[in-house]
Image (cartoon, rainbow, N blue to C red; front, side, top):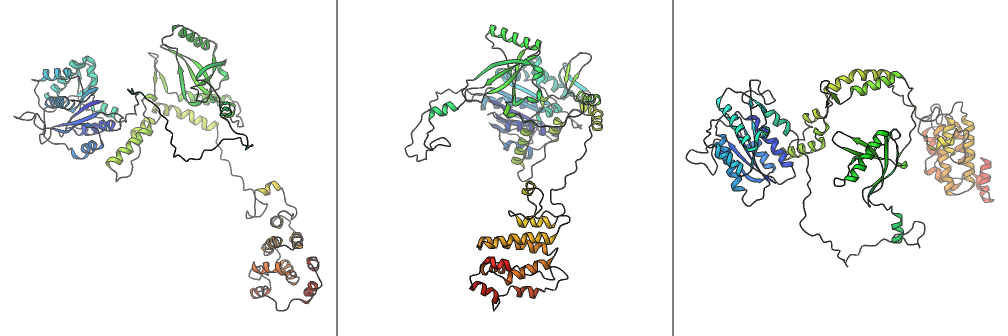
Length: 638
């Protein structure tokens, strides 16, 4: 918990300070702490501070007193605070900031008191109270940071291309404006920082470009363990009003066998938290493709046990000399699932340890068969050249020191950066759509330019050697000549269709008539025989299935031979069964007309009259039923 006072110069030459202070406050808003921030403006048109009077501490405004940082402070900096033409002494502002901290931290417990000053030292000031200021800062244990800004035209980086003014050879360099006030101001800053923190204090002075680079990334979320000063007591209360149903556990195949607590405990895998060595093997036997898990553990020897440290070090060096690894059974605690891990020796000039990497169980492995590439020297050389060109480490030939071209530890988590950016934008500009991810984040995630350039030639060789040919899509599985209207997946298992079977005669009929050299009359005779077999049962379900077969017959007859279907339907109409013919009439199955199949003589009117009820039934048919005729007689007549 810290008390921070931001001193902001709002003169016309301080346009960049608005951007820097906004980024500073953004980091504070999203930080998970209880820091309180005050904002003191100097160079304002008006004066609003408790020390003003007798022409002293003029044009200084305490815009915000110490309080928790919120989005309203960002809104004020963005919209309400504007550059003005007035000037104020930055030393007077420093005195005002000390006064704010002294009076507004009374009764509060702050671990740190801090002042940030954003100025370009363009105003006149007096060093008469400098000693008092330095001793007050030391006495109140207030840390200090200066962010000097350049004056004149900026090139976008915050630094100017003129001469440079160095603070005693330490810290950053700043532009020389040719104005005596700025030189005096920088010299005073040097004196104050050395007095407070020695030569290291010069590291707390940042240029504009350096400030933008450090503040452009939102601070990551910090988690600290907090001491709990109270005794935690867990009490279980019985709620008699709870009417929740209690489900009794039991075995799956026997309802009468209860599932006891003892059985449940025996089913569970019991293992205390431990890491025990199962055995050793050559490191070449543990292939990198088997590495899994979401973390890598480094295991060090206990600090207070010298004997264990010596034994542990011996194990590490033996594994390293023999090029072997240890296979470890690892369990975090008795509630965690056991794991199999491999322990690699890891030896550096300042430390040594074992590196644990999780290995898969047999059930975790899935074997896929791929055609292997032919082993060729050209292939190996091309891949080796590509790997060498993609190296993210550069070795200095003079000092033999490895330089990291892509420092991953300095790259922010892009998900957090995008989240904070959207939250901030929604808080300040809720009516506007969310912005795209910032270019600086993309620049951080992009590979180094040096590596990208080196990869071009090896990549071109890889493309030539390993040609990628687009595979053509296979034709959709279907019948030999027909469309896919009657295609079923089950037909693949049935094999080729040679006759209209009893299981799916209608579908078999569709397939038969669409095959090459198909004989429509033969296929239709097979279908008619199946229709007769269904009519023999003299049952409604059989009649319904027969109607489906007749519909399939009619559909294909339109394309091949409508006369064959019309003759069949006329015979059925003459030798009709009452219930069956009623179903045929209701479904509207009638003769094929010349509109459906050109060149035929049956008109639409004749087809309609064909289904109309007849006044006098056929005498032969009536005699058959009077004499006790049955369906077999009808089928024989058909």
